[in-house]
Length: 80
Image (tube, rainbow, N blue to C red; front, top):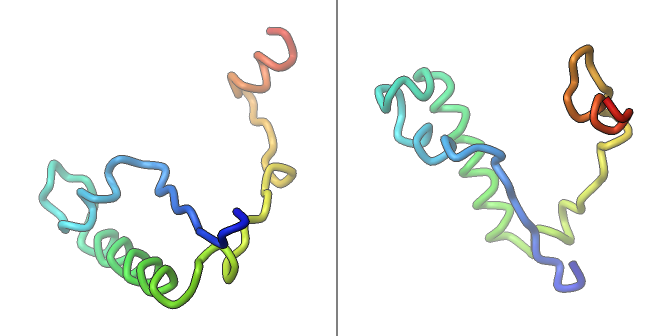
């Protein structure tokens, strides 16, 4: 983005639940919750330090992704 703004997408609606620790409908373990908390602190610190998009620029990883046997997206793209 021209402004340097960064965007973070956890890719799950359970991120917030995992912040609360284990016991929330078995969303995560104690270790998993600690990891989510540490990542969240790192993200918030990066956002507070500078425009995150300038410091941590987006990089496409699409070329690193490969179709797998039974991949519905690959099957659709192939016309199946």
